[in-house]
View 1 (tube, rainbow, N blue to C red):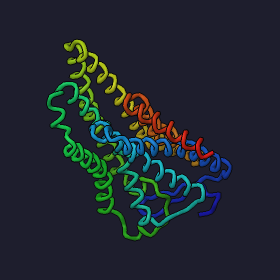
View 2 (view 1 turned 90 degrees about the vertical axis):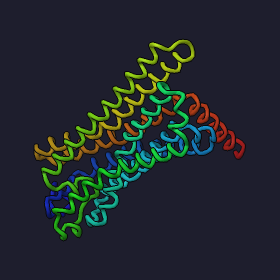
View 3 (view 1 turned 135 degrees about the vertical axis):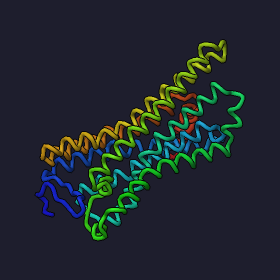
View 4 (view 1 turned 90 degrees about the horizontal axis):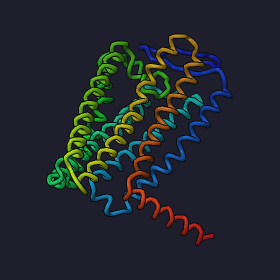
Length: 318
């Protein structure tokens, strides 16, 4: 494909997109680096704080929160790699792209699924406090973590299995950018994936509504310290809802991009694609763990302690 070609099409319906404006491509790639790397460092710092604080590792909600840090950091790094491949126009064989594509697909679902688990944990802590220790024991918490990752990666695995059922073998050797759409070659497959997402989202909303309604009921009936704890749990659950909304906003990206692509101007399509990446994939995943970490009293105190220790260490070396 030549540099000034706006759109190419490879076998079995796969598409390759590249723009003709190198300045625009350089600016958007630079913006991606500005947004991605600071939040990657913050997430890594927060995860190190979690590892260093023994009391954080004994509580289920912090163990679950650590999973979002791992998943979001890996997601930002892998998607940023794909952004850089656009910049340098690095085309890889579809077969080489598939592991990275499936990894990104699974990581996309880890944070929303973990947030649901965190909501359930808060529901148990507020509505069934006497059973919380048994339900969210260290062993069962790790089992829930494994279940979260299994559920998250089952979705791209299903897409991959369907993809293998109809794709031609020659497709695996064709050059492509490593975006998820390379395994969604048929319209019916794309529609089915969208419908499954809607059903999944409705199920998530039902779980959130049940947890929030139950905590509100406990908050009204409680008194004194119990009422304060219930109100705090209610605010925490609202924060989880905000996190979930931020994480799922990126799903609207492909719908918007598909409409823009119908116009036929691939340069506009690429601008919209980069905007969706920055706004929905990067910013949403960067803000939600940061807000949660800063709002939680224990985690915030631990972050300030280790940040101060690091600053004092640097000052001593100077």
